[in-house]
Length: 310
Image (cartoon, rainbow, N blue to C red; front, side):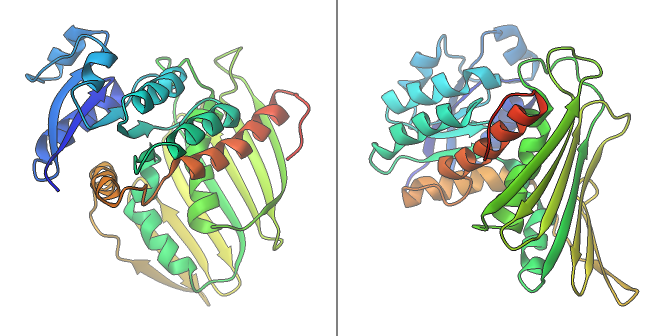
């Protein structure tokens, strides 16, 4: 297979990272150009390549597209990419509801060997990859996950559930407890900076095998925390996703686990290239993202006081 002709829509925080990496990954990709409403922003990041004048123009000139536009645009842009018969890597969330995600997934199922992959980049974090290997030999009792950040006033189109909790939900459902049915969900939240959207949410889960989990997600914490702690019958595993560290404790003995130096976004883009060659998403498929959103929708209903049951 030759180089993949790819374009990027949106050059905000994540989009510009995609542009820089795709420009360097010349063995797999040829970056044909980008599209963003703010052309000055595109040039300000040092990009000197082609700037398309619309998403339709870009999609008519590529075989694959990376969508890094604001979250509320994801559904319509992915559906437009389907009209152009393109492979898609869309930043999370796939959409802002499981219902919309189902519509998008059905549209892509109708296409012939076209990839729909969702940018849950933490699945490529080397800490998560090593944790998956470790847990293959453990009997899990409970999992505690924390993802906290200071308030970012630039993020206004999603609440903390679809902005931060979505990362840990994806890890919990597909890396820690893959294919294990979820039995119960409880969730609580509050606002602190934003009267409309919750910026602190805690969710508690029980799985079919009685294993428990909790996720704390905050955009109101004066520190950056990315932690996963796993209580097992014969071990306690502490993971720091930011500092790429894993410690396993057994019988009061502590073992540091080697974590490879891997750039998660580059690994994700490499997986996207391999998925295109295979004709299917090898990881982070649209269907798995839809399952994440089904649980997140339930959490949203619980914290905002809407009636629903999982």
